[in-house]
Amino acid sequence: MPQLRLKLLEPHRTSLEKCVYCPKLSRAACPVSNVEANETVTPWGKMSMAYFAGRGDVPLDAGHADPAWACSACYACRERCDHKNEVATVLTDARAEFFARGLAPEGARLAAARFQAREDARGGELDALSRAEAGPAAVQVLLGCGYVRHAPDVARDALDATEALTGAPVRPVRACCGLPLLYAGDREGFVAAARRLAAEVAQAERFVAVDPGCARAVRVEYARAGVSARAPELFVDLARASLDRLQRSSSERRVRYHDPCQLGRGLDRYDAPREILARITGRPPEEFIHRREHADCSGGGGLVPATRPASSAAIADGRIAEHRALGGGLLVTHCAQSLRRFRTRGEPAEDLASLVARAVAPR
Ligand code: SF4
Ligand code: SF4
Image (tube, rainbow, N blue to C red):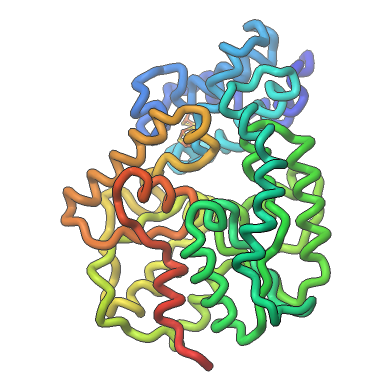
């Protein structure tokens, strides 16, 4: 059997073939194809196009490359698939092949090109958050660029909460995990970013990640890219392990929890955030109709806000509309991308890290 001409797809040949010959059983799970109503961007359509491009059945051009970016990396299709096909992973590798050939869509190319400029700006943003007393032995906290840049209130809360929970001075990690480059398709840039972060945290006494997208990148995607790095503790696990230190708040309103794709399906954390919210508010959080493994996406992941902004907004609007139709309340998530999606679409959502920061009692 001839090798696929897109080499990164060769290890995924079985998954690709299962999709190509499948009667689209995961179709209803995909947030992108649901809002675009287009067969080409169903999980089946995207996998088929990648397979045909890999085999040489279609020309390698921007039009045939584009569907690979119509994925928010939400992993919802995997939960509906009898084979547990990792569609998002395959499409991420397809993006790398297309990007290397100059076939990435404009939003992805711009995201990759802006990465270094944003890294430079991040230094100042992190300086504003840093604690003067934090020395080299501090707990290093990978906040997530999405929080640092777009929700500095949450970044500050996450640092305060981590300091209180660990009882040690904290210091934000300066390097970015590189996830925007991975989703853009810039594999070389992603590997370089991963190596920078791995070197920065290698000697840390403790290493905690707040944003689950960053945490999953370090825990899962670095190994796939051949970069060895210590695995971060998750902020949500840290808080879950100290439930007895979280004080009940009389001011927290009725809350509804949105399962972020990266934390739920990505890192298998469903109970911990719910237990934390129940502890703080005195009752289990309200739920969406689809929750936990089958939760709907917010439209914030996979660089979809940059490559397909209208689809991303429509996905977020759907989630917000459901929240309001179910009675509203305070919408709580724990992911910088979904937080940003909700806030920019008009829902004053909060992050779990902020609720923990307000609730944590000093030792
Ligand atoms: S992900 Fe699974 S269910 Fe969906 S098209 Fe592929 S094989 Fe079929
Ligand atoms: S991972 Fe999510 S966005 Fe991507 S194809 Fe599957 S369901 Fe669609």
